[in-house]
Length: 308
Image 1 (tube, rainbow, N blue to C red):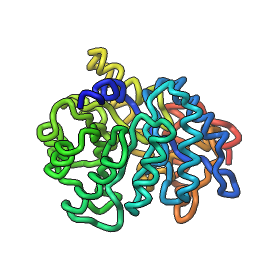
Image 2: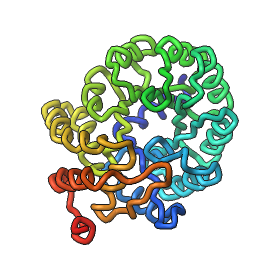
Image 3: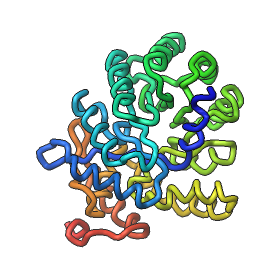
């Protein structure tokens, strides 16, 4: 794995999973996507991801996913690592998108456990091995059983790591903390373990995690990045304080399915037009009021949005 040592060193911290902004006619707002990326980098995010769960990939066509990746790569311009989500429920689509990520110069590709199909562990091994073998860039596996209905077992992941040198990390959106501990035990302490559960970002650092890919970074990129920075600097109390400071925001952003509350919040901040593609939709008016009430303790809101 020597060829991936340098990459593994820089793929640490807060890799922000950016939403996909839409116009009111549901077309993709590429200009706003570029502005969001610049804002994230200026705010201290250590890396950028697009077309992951937060980016509504299942609502995008394959062509749109490629264009979002290309737009993001150009906006990032190598300032921070770029880790697009390239996974799909369709194996051939996943291969195509992962190869495209390599073509446009991504630093790694994040590949989700296929959703809906509920493949066996043996089938998951074959799927991920084929994807890893198809490219030369690093692969970060994305395990989110609450969305996919399938949990990638630690033994299966360890087998993949043994057989595929470019599988260098995993995003675990997994509330089973015993499971995530065993990932590092079985895959090696240098394996990159990222938290995809907001309330586990700090705890995962404590067991040797590499950082987090947290949806909350869309709202407070500076604070989410600082959780990692403080930890890396040895300021454990600062990191822990931020963990608790962000908890109320984390909680309210997941009272409806991600990214619906995020987009409502970003609309209140004046960052985007708060539009999702069906079958997703904005939260109820009641929840939007609660989001607004919590949000005002963290960020500056736009009067014209909050007065509606």
